[in-house]
Amino acid sequence: MLTTETPYSNIREVAGYFRVSVTTIRTWMRKGLIPESSYIKIGEVYRFRLDEVEASVTKAKKPKERKK
Image (cartoon, rainbow, N blue to C red; front, top):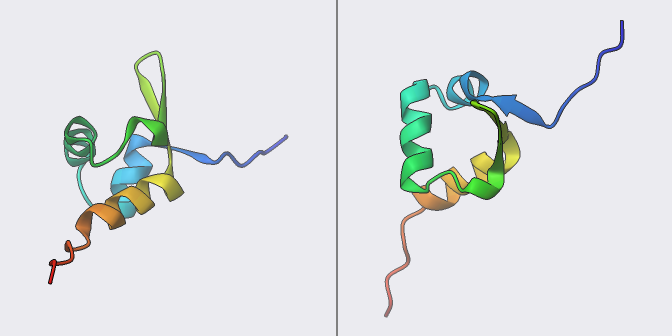
């Protein structure tokens, strides 16, 4: 049997990685916290590049610097 690793994760794997619900992942997508460039949609199924999702979520959670 041929096994191939893919750079893509399904929505349940992404939710598990961040320890949130699938609904939260969908909310983050809708709000733009997870940009469209970090996932593909095949029919009704989403596949995510986990490294890109993590970078986007991490960037969004950083507090903005105050201007001095």
